[in-house]
Length: 113
Length: 110
Image (cartoon, rainbow over all chains, first blue to last red; front, side, top):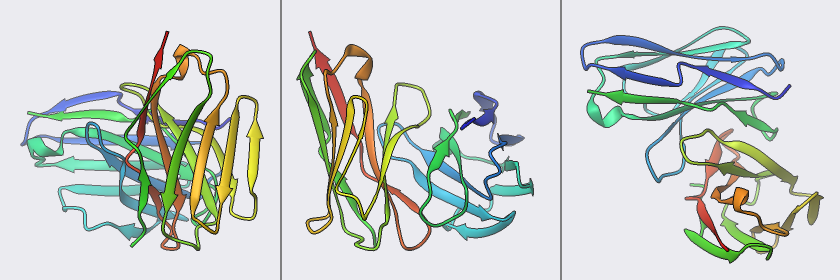
């Protein structure tokens, strides 16, 4: 099983809403990642968690708040987003950070209105 | 910082081989990946190669690595219409990040 599951698949939210994206894996991986992908662009790293601790924050605005409640789950809490935050949000996991296979989920397509 | 470059487009005839090229700058990258992305979908890990390898073959896919020139290629044999997608080269950088190239859009001509 090399599956990373993301929910929801699509999300439309207003600029005053609070919503959360969820990512789950059951491969025993201890590194999990959030990436943002705009149309026709490559994915860009947002956050890295290693052993449930935040290890990399790529200067992401505080309206994005990640959380790793356990080794299988990764959340991304969204609050007061802007229309330019509309994108495909991808979660990934790997056995550990540093040179291992990394598997991606299908993404959540977020539209901010 | 780390940079990964790919050409943006490739068009091949159905049944021919496709070769997608990638160059990177971080010589300490020991894991190099090829991902496939179909429209509206996530990233599918196609294959990967360790930097101590020159070549890896997996069914219709062949990855060649020239570590001296920091050049990676993906060859798809007998290209089919289902191979139409964007192909991303990616490297695991020394800063514990997966860095992606801009992606190569592969289109198949009948």
